[in-house]
Image (cartoon, rainbow, N blue to C red; front, side, top):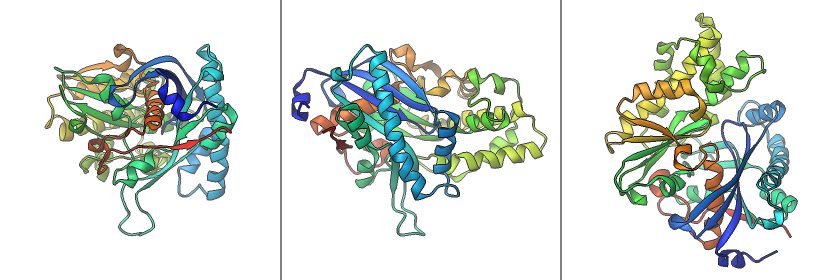
Length: 398
């Protein structure tokens, strides 16, 4: 194996970034060519693929994200199992990109978040700010024969951050502009935004989670279809329904939305239990299936719009919103959000030369690259950390 210092000396490196998000769709694998490091690096996406989870794996992961259904044995087993899934995804992505694993220099893996505690629990001294991602990087390294960097979020939390959102670092690299105020809006399982003022510096960035993205919509579709569908393709189901705006208003009373940034959330707050409780309530109130999907879609749209009105627009006269993630394909969701935020131009990450589906996987390739150079990968203005810090841990193949 080439020494890590030798990799840092190469003019460019082939790095595979692996990501599985809160939507639990599967493993996203981005094959990248990276030159330089830090905020001045250059990145080219040369291949991207998603290896979907089957229903059995997806439901097991949902159970792991539930206090009532999870246990340490299941987490332990799935940690190793997912490591194998991630390794297979890396090999498959390299093959699809026309490469052999021998051509790959490094792998960066986010893993799969199963629990996230962004702030200390004042009622339990043992529940300090912390996070848990599974998908063992040693398994990935041994199965691929490549060094793997992973487990990034705890480093940010160790210096006072919330460990999220991390992708704003890459948003700044990709979308900063000397003359335009921009917002990068990711809509994955969770929604998050990055505010990038014209000519701004890293310390000027404002970023935070806006609330649920596709998570509740996906759960509603899966539940109401009897498991035959896992997402609302193009927002067609929601387009046939009528949203219950009273239910939307009540969901928006959740205390998360009133909290000021920096803030982050996940399945522990807006997961399966939250969705099933609201589905049951809406069914009792006589809503049809399409109405329920439309209501969750409207909830996501309103949560984004409210976040902008409360925390974005008072600080930055944004002109463009650049949307990425699975939600960028949901036409009904985008139309609802745009209607609530007149005056903003909505466009997709793909319009700027990078697949919006690949962006988060690309981010973890860049974080692995920074690790080689001892360069920080967090933005304290986004996570609340006390300082920039190097993130990640290393697993070697030999």
